[in-house]
Image (cartoon, rainbow, N blue to C red; front, side, top):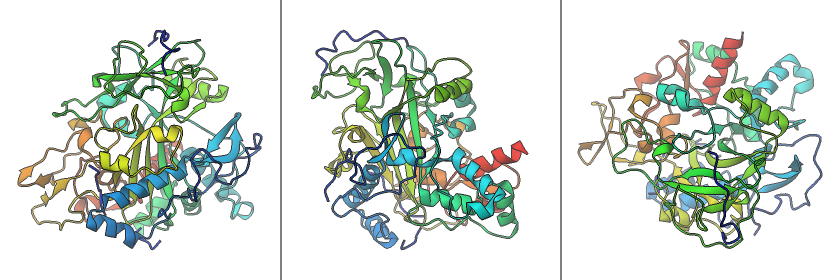
Length: 499
């Protein structure tokens, strides 16, 4: 493994708006400047997936040499690690020259979703001669299909709440997601047919322990959204915001209904520019000058009629309409630059200059000037190791001695309770004290995604809290590790059910 370095509803209209202001060795522009330097185009008949561009940040390189990254980890160089994570985020959210639905697309919005990759994979198998080399060809349209977060399905309590409904007073809020891949990652998934259950079973039968072949540029993302109604005149959208982990995690999970801070989102962008920033927690009892924000303070897009209909089918009601907004509240980002992939997780925050855990002031200080506009409104937690020290030996008694490195996304993992996790005897011991990491706010992206694997019994090892996980552990006997991507076994199982 390699490091997880942890730096350290219906709502009342705003009456204050007028005053609201792999392990492989593997320039100055702003986020809101087109990466190709060209002017925006009219809507295209096809969307071309855009590789992660160079954002023009001094010292940032992608992909970065794995030896260099692991040197940062070994030295505890949190500044270099944070700068790299921010460089990836800046590049990922850069505007392209392409448009869809009348809006410019950011780099990550041009990438194939898992549904699109799955369709391309079967199409390539049916027409191999015509398809060769076209694994990442332009899309006729974008399939922005939103779904319930897959990890919620692993906890019975969360399954009942995973409806994606909008916030309402006294109710909990859940979110919806999609999963997308860079052109390089999408090509590997299609070429190797990694979403096919028979492909994975053949690899397992042949004695392989893991899928391979991703390039150091391979990147996978999980954008997470909430839906903001735009069809109700001046109605504001009430959104719960993260203010940090509780001193004692609730046994049943730290749901959004337990969060104490709210912001109000104006879909009509009536908040004056250069408003006073203010610091959370913000009142949840009504809009004020400091807790009201424009839709343009978020990365967002408008739902088409087809997208709204698909969302309503998912929800089993009619809550969404064409023209409503999907606002980005969070995103997981993984790159295959090191053996255990790098992990960055982002979430929207009211004051990005002062952020709570699992981010830190050190992470904020490393933000580049090139990160501008809505993308600068997001906080980052970053993991290039699971625990500290980064690569502890595997003791015979199964107890790992080290310090916990928590890297999680509050909009995804905070609701996890002890019932979410698979019992795991190798709890992390910190300074002689066994730490109970069976809570969502005590997790690490790398520990979790190391579990991603395929087995003949159509099960998975389940989630665990932050701890060190080695490739050779008995829990992986008879399983095929799937390159840290849960989407591979998940989609493969879905495909098996359709047969």
